[in-house]
Image (cartoon, rainbow, N blue to C red; front, side):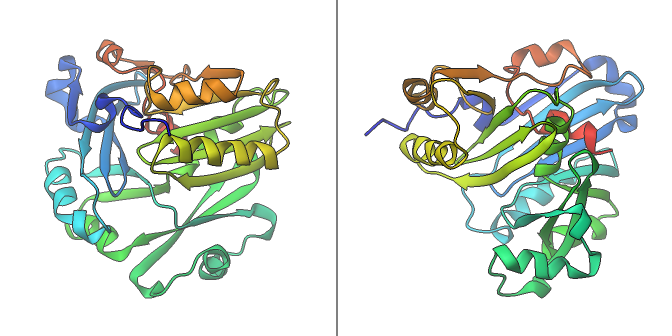
Length: 289
């Protein structure tokens, strides 16, 4: 059994604050992008005029059992926002993908129930995102208690599912190449395969140890008929290159590539403190505008 203790970097799990001091007097004019998960919150401040990320915050919320148990901490963190208009990237496995040609807005609950058991659907607001380049729609659910908090605090929140920036970024890649990308976060990962500009596979997996992670990933590759000797994997997200997870992957898969943050936008020099493959999803959130 591989020791799972060094799976992730401490940087990804600790509280962190970075901000370009040249924006101290006009921070309220910046766009605020937030990635909201049960166990963590990450935020990025974006100057749309200069097309540049200028600030970053991350907060570890521990391991709450449900959204309700971490709501007070979310309130404490978000009430300090100077921006009253924000964009939220909501991280939750209660979602499904629907081909755009088959999508009907009045059937949101039906789509979700096809893949998920929802005991109390009235406790959720059902939302959807379109990914035009891939001709699909993401249907997802946000607990009403979370969504109502923003409404009550007069915070104008624009909601997106966490999969949207991942899929939007993938759709902009070279359509002639195959992209098999794995997005790694604390105790979960997402895998996507795009060929010829079309999405072939997208799914999310929970894991507890690096052995779990590698088992699920190798199973996905087998089902997709990807060759561990010749097909490459692009890894993005919160992981260290010097970790048990990466070392075990390298043992089984010959071609591993570390992805980087988007090159179509600029990053203030403060971001040199963050590895370029970290928070890949958050830093692609500008694509959801």
